[in-house]
Image (cartoon, rainbow, N blue to C red; front, side, top):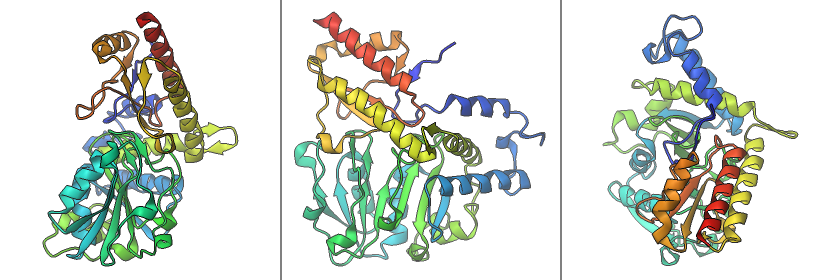
Length: 368
């Protein structure tokens, strides 16, 4: 039986092969007599799972040796506080506001440091990106924060900013929650990147932090010990009990990613090509439609989250009901912006996007 196509923005669909493997190992992992949820995080069985997951993630995203990979909890929202607690040193930080998530980051950081707005695309209703050359970064800034893919507004930075070219020596902090592992990362431009796993890497509960070693060890005195990057790194992400099952599931996703092929490309490079093809198919249809519209500027449209609107919104409920009948789930847009949204993460196959486009076409024809 074919499963429905789940377009949820997160927690999101996971690769079916990963779910099947996890199901087969639920009661007994590799003959250990235990399921992963039952294992001690300090036992040899789980340590092997953790070490493999970390190594695979480093390989997939070509993370340089001078970066630590931390498996933490609390999601991106917690990192909005944890980052300034570790990096601000009680000073200022700059934020580029490109949508709901970067706005949340700015507001939360203001509780722990002097948060400044370096640039904002609020005036365009977050349908564009402010040019990096227009950013007003303070000379005393401890870091510059960007959300490289805005899940709600469907805006993506297709290239990370080069702060050094802007005359800024502060490290770049990137919230890449909703497109991590969908494309490569230019680590030469990054000081720290973080992301909740529940969109592209695994189930909710795990947060991945990739942080340059020289940025570790400067936590504020009132930073909780479990959130101090130095302590987390020194203890191999096990200062407190980590989200063991989330790490295991993410590890299975990493192995699935490594096995992906598109022609001569493998891993993340293969996914990047596949994701581009999926996004182009969907955007090209929306742009040619008389019923639907996407309002994001073409040069910064997300390849992961595609918001769109029916020009006649009185048809929204009929559209969603028809989609559900076709096995196309979770297409309703975020409550803050309305409309529709199709999240087409790594686990969404091309067949799912093709089925969506066919439904979009059929529904439009019935409304003519």
